[in-house]
Image (cartoon, rainbow, N blue to C red; front, side, top):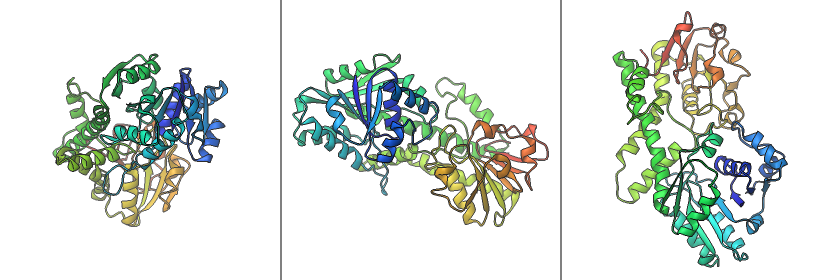
Amino acid sequence: MKLSIIGTGYVGLITGVCFAELGNQVVCIDKNPEIISKLNNGVPHFYEPGLAELLKGNLENGHFVASSSYEPILDTDITFICVGTPQSDDGSTNLDQVYLAAQEIGKILKRKREYHLIVVKSTVPIGTTEEVGKIIEKMGVCREKFGIVMNPEFLAQGSAIEDFLNGDRIVIGTETEKDAKMLEGLYSKFRTSVVRTDLRTAEMAKYANNAFLATKISFINEIANSCSIMGVDATQVADIIGMDKRIGRQFLNAGAGWGGSCFGKDLNSLIHQAKKAGVEPKLAQAAVQVNNLQPLQLIAIAEQHGGDMRGRTVSILGLTFKPNTDDIRDAPSIKVIRKLIEKGAKVKAYDPAGMERAKKVLDEVKYCSSIAEALEQSDVCFILTEWDEIRQIQQKDIDRMKKKLVIDGRNVLDKKKFRDIEYFGIGRK
């Protein structure tokens, strides 16, 4: 099929490149000329394992191209809306980019005779996909000439390509049998379950999915904080309850809390939508509250065992909110570093992929080229991202520290492998 993708962020570019890899003709549209130039030269503007290789291969075989014009929509069968839906100050979702995309689609479709399918993939509040259809119709496009579908994404940064090509399910929210069959045809090569539902259920499914995962993390962090005081190993507790098939072990790793562009934004949006509907979302609000406080638990541990942070040299290992991405949005490291600087600490940091992005928001930090440099003459070390490189810290690296106080915010180190170390994990004895 011929596909147009509006938006070249994580969702848009992954969607475009993966569909191209499956033999479709794909054009990704973005108004940023710098991004378009990079993509057409085989250079992604963010890091994701395997993305650069897939992009280059599909540029070479002619299955993928990037454009700053909406005009290519005219020659495609399906258009995906994959634009950003940032959070407003009140927690609601800013839909300006979604509605602008709908208007641009409408301008093009007025000139098209063939039936066209519009697929909303961005995470949007309940009722938004219907509104997209109304906007396109108001632009002068006959309603019989286009279909509208909600097809939420369930990608995790760091494994997005695998998640896209081998996901748990494909959700198709639609109003008609014709639209459902058309999108199912595009997904016919995927060996996974396809769930058909209505537009609003598909929209809510994405919010509910992220809210549950975020709540699961906040739950185990709250348990772990109690375990630390009670002399209980939270990791073993998580292993035990994770063996219950009704619970599962995933997302039960206690630590510094969740971050990234989705969980916080989506929970706040869900809370805003619920309150607007007259519902008090107590559990979702509690999950956000627990997570907001969790990074500060690490500093409290450091102060309890290392004293006042003023004048101390502090090493931060890991800046991104998770490994295998360069994304630092809402990462626990940001909260930890800002609080440490506020307390008068001197902060050094190392991350395999996230330092360039971090430099744009944290300018009072010394960025280091290696773990060894970051640990040199340090009083305290905070581990905040579970990169494999960080998991493999050696004794010789720890020996560079002035005081060997390690606060492991991801529980990745085995204390028994190190000598003369004062080690504290989250929820560990």
